[in-house]
Image: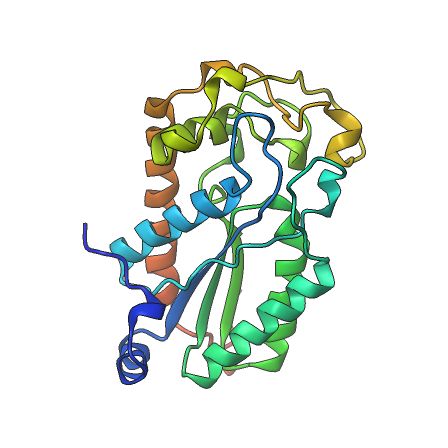
Amino acid sequence: MNSPVFWERQTSPEAGEMVKRTDAVIIPVGAIEQHGPHLPLAVDTLICQAVAEAVSAQTGVPVLPPVTYGVSGSHGDFPGTVALRPETMIAVMEDLIDSLHASGVRQFVLLNGHIWNNGALDVTAEKLRVRHPDSRVRALGYVTMYPGPEVNGRVQFGRGLMHANFFETSVMLHLHPDLVRMERATSHVDVDSFWDYRMDQVSDTGVWGREVQEASAGHGREEFDRCVQTTAKAVASAVAEPWPDPTHRPTV
């Protein structure tokens, strides 16, 4: 494996030459928010950044420093969370992409590590596709390049409520075991519901998922490696994808 290509470590002339070779970037987007009594606030940023850097190493696509803060207000009153409003995140992402576009970047992978960022990132992509018709923008989660049911999170229900669970705890034990307090780990039985709730309305610990105490670094390594491999394969194909020809009309 090669080393990641870090955007911020280039000089200005180097960045200009780099964009001539590869007009694509990966922007990891995370969050600073409560992750129960056993995980640090930066879980979403740390995991997403690690996946993005590994994908950069495999594909040669430059990776930017992570957008650390996310749309996290729905965690409610648990201490530690630092949240952006969706409107603020959209504005931040627009500014970042406008700046990168001015430097010659034309392909933008917004790699998301926090599910409640999805709406803001999708709106960002739509706005920028309109503003910059010479560009391609795609927002995706680092786990979305393989089927969701294959993610072993020990969570059956809850959609976006899966949080500080077996999956995230295992990946953190692989990446940053020094930041995990397994002696404090708790679990929460997930239940089915139509609505998505604030986390403090459905969990007294901020955890959503079963059997968190069984998390392991070995399982985390397997999940992390699969996230990297599937995302790297998708990104490599994406940046090489031909642009559509508006004059072409496929035959039926």
